[in-house]
Image 1 (tube, rainbow, N blue to C red):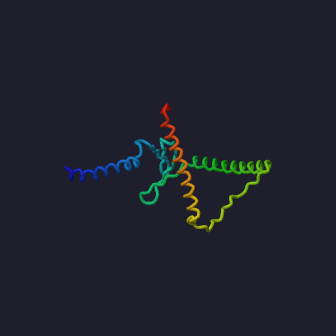
Image 2 (image 1 turned 90 degrees about the vertical axis):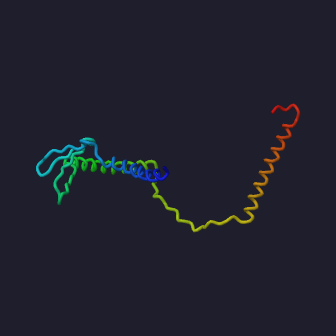
Length: 156
């Protein structure tokens, strides 16, 4: 029984490890729809709405590129965002000048050449003296609490 389990366990682990990988590579059925056009076809991704034009490439390769409208729209949006970014940076500079704030570039601190040093004997002695004093105070407080508890009539 034990030998059978030893042989079965790795097989189950391999099977479980391959299931998620194979599920990720498969597309949902009907995700893409194709329409023939002159010199190739249009591919519509039904999940995202992206349209691509596909044409035969070298060998059995098929090359797909975003449809012309979409790429022009993206280029236009990119140009608008760049212009807006330039305007916003200019506005920030203008507001900083009004407020009297001058932006400083970040200055990198030069690395120090200090190396880790062990504490001196005197430092160790001072630290141990401090701990000893704390321990004595704690012990004295416990003794006084014990003596208070031994007095008659004191509720616990």
